Length: 55
Image (cartoon, rainbow, N blue to C red; front, side, top):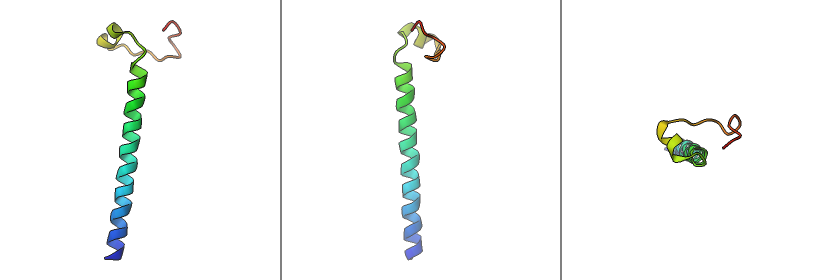
């Protein structure tokens, strides 16, 4: 019983870490997509900031 409860808390912590990582990844994508003009976003062009100094 005690080991089962410990295993459950470990799984909960792992799920929390995955969710936190996913939300951080999503916010990075949103931040990366933001600076580009809307017409580029509509056509699906997402050049990296390093290779596009004119932006």
